[in-house]
Amino acid sequence: MIIFTGSGRSGTKLYAMLFDAHHEYAVDRLKTILEREVPKQDAPLTNPLTDPTQRRRIMEEHLAGIDLATFRDSSNPYIHFIDALVAMDPEVKIVLGVRDGRDFVRSGVSRGYHTSAVNASFGMRPGVDDPYYDNWSQLSPIQKCAWQWTHRNHKALTGLKDAPQDQWTLVRLEDLTANPRRELHLTRLEEFVGRRAERLWLDVKVNKNASFQLPPKEEWSDTWNQEFYEIAGPLMHWLGYPTPERYAAGSSSQPSPAMIRRNSPAARAT
Image (tube, rainbow, N blue to C red; front, top):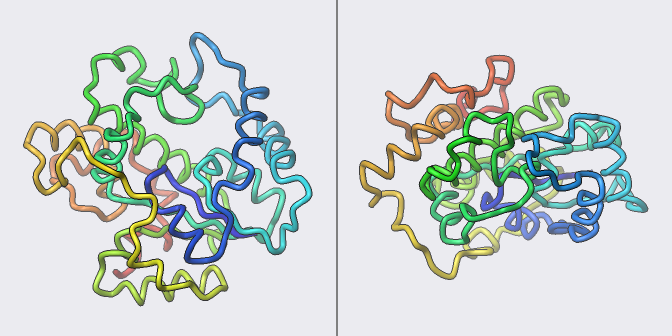
């Protein structure tokens, strides 16, 4: 089984096109299962799926009848079920796709992510156990989407820290689409996946926004940058994205030292 996942707006559909994978396989069925397993609450927890047996049961129902040996899918909800995927298929390979958080925010604000009333378990709003819960309504659209990007990527990284090191890798979208050495990065990904990519998709804008409410990140004001980096700075720095020094450390969103492996951008040559 090969799984491509991410925070959303991070290239999962592109990976499906590159490697001839499903995109959001039976996602409506998964939503139905989650609605049954995670009832809506007035004061939900940020992570109500704390029972590993429940997570595996959800994945087994979602993927019932598939051939694990040949199954390939790209879908963001898998960030919540990484341990269940490893338990179901000890040979699973997982690709976590990440993207510059500022581009996620620009896309997310334009798609109304900051107005979402989706259950907190899906990482669109903080639960009552999250420090941002009490003042969520006072946060700006940029701050809300910065929290979403940080929380969802941290959720994935936390799940991956106990997965076998040689069975997961982290890929920055920009390394495949805007890096002069993208052929090297794509070759590394092909070697990990064990399949050759359809390179023609690299120059196609996949699942792009029709319009944007924010300008490109290079044109952001100092206020917008401050709003973003105060929440997302440590993770941006860890992922190897440009980060002002004063925002590069000191947040609970930064991955723990145990998670800094060969798979992290900071631990490998680019």
